[in-house]
Structure formats: structure tokens, C-alpha cells
Amino acid sequence: MLGDWFLKAYLAHPRLPVWQCGCWFCYGRDLTWIPAYHQPKTPAFQHSIAAIADLGVQLRASLTRMNPIQAWDQMVIAAQLAHHALTSPSRRPWIPQDFLGHWHHASAGLPVC
Ligand SMILES: [Zn+2]
Image (cartoon, protein in one colour):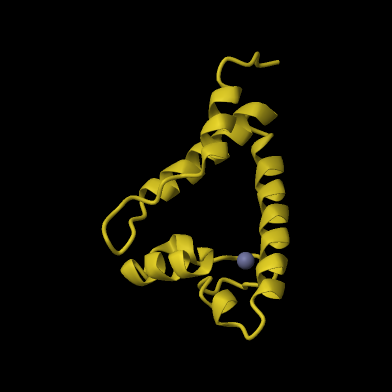
């Protein structure tokens, strides 16, 4: 079902850069290669792990400019904005998952050391 939802959103806006992934397994390809693979669970898992590792690298790189909480919150905000930039084929917005909002609210007001 998630794959179907993804493909419909992709087909509505196939040129968005957000569909491309630079992880170890995707090599900059559109993410459509994953559901098109003959056994998509394996590349989906590989992409997920590699993408998480890439997020860690990005987070680590941000620590030269801000503390870890701020850096993580900036990444969360960017993810939320990326969701809002998407719409389904029926023009409904792609609602960010609740955990992004929870992380953002949890970060607000934390002391910056
Ligand atoms: Zn990937």
C-alpha cells in the first residue's frame, strides 16, 4: 500500500528532486527502481538503512554550525516541508508522519548547551 501511495505521488510530480536518492544503493536514481525491483523488500530495506546512515552523516556535518538538538530539529523541519511540497494525484497534501511533529515539539525549548 505504501508503495502504491508512493508511485501515485511520484506520477503526479515525477520531476521533483525529492524522489531521487543518493544513498549507496540508489546512486541518485529515482526511488521508483525499488518498487519495480522483482523482490522490492530487499532493496527497500537496503535503501532505508543506507538513507539512515546518510542522515547520520548530514547530522554530524551540521554539528559544526549548531548543537545536536538544533541540527536534528532542522532536519525534521526540512522533512516536514518536503512532505508539504508534495500532493497526491487527487491534490490532497502529503501529510508528514506524526513522529516528525513530535520530534519538533520535543526539541522546542530544550536548553542549548
Ligand atoms: Zn536510497
